[in-house]
Length: 42
Length: 227
Image (cartoon, rainbow over all chains, first blue to last red; front, side):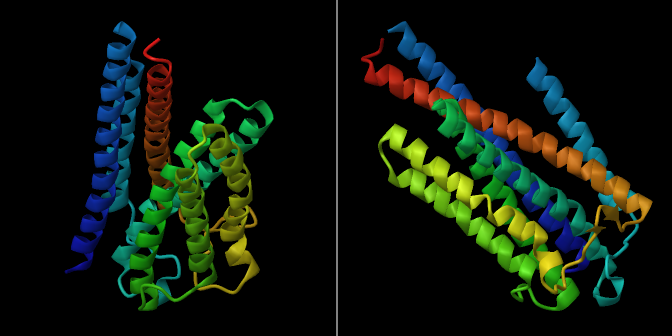
């Protein structure tokens, strides 16, 4: 693999992992918010 | 709404950072004489901001730990733990990106250079911090003991930062006695990349703390029989 490909792959992995974590934590907050609302209704 | 504006700003800054990293910045090299391929230097714009973000994360853990021990408020413990988790992610990225750069500059991925070794110690100090937290069930005991560990673990941050000044190293020194040894395009690209990564870091930290607080709230509601 050439240098530019290596760099692009590394960048993509770095930003990709951060993006996946961001989406995951955002969905988790949403899910927890819903659960708390459901529990408080009870 | 504020979240969306913040996210939009983060996105724009990071797009500009990527443009500057790959197009605006010349394939300059710190220690050009040892680099096999000057293009690999661009990894610096991910590597250094990630290192600064990790240091900031561990400083937040340190401050959160002190504040918890002083005020006994769990919100500080939650902040300390969330920041340590994020710090580990960024520190892992620093080690990974650094070893790719090292392979290009030094011919090996890892050579136990003082900066590499002290950063690895730093990484494992916070792995221990999080593992220790997971091992304790009692909430108060977990917060108290891990706060003490969070304070002691911070000693590895100045150790990692100062390692290149204390010991002989192959690691490039870009800031020496407060003087930045970089050309203007490199400095500007670095600043924009740093702002971009810090914007992401603080947003993820905000969401992580929010998730931890909600988890604790749910546990409390459940323990109180739904009241």
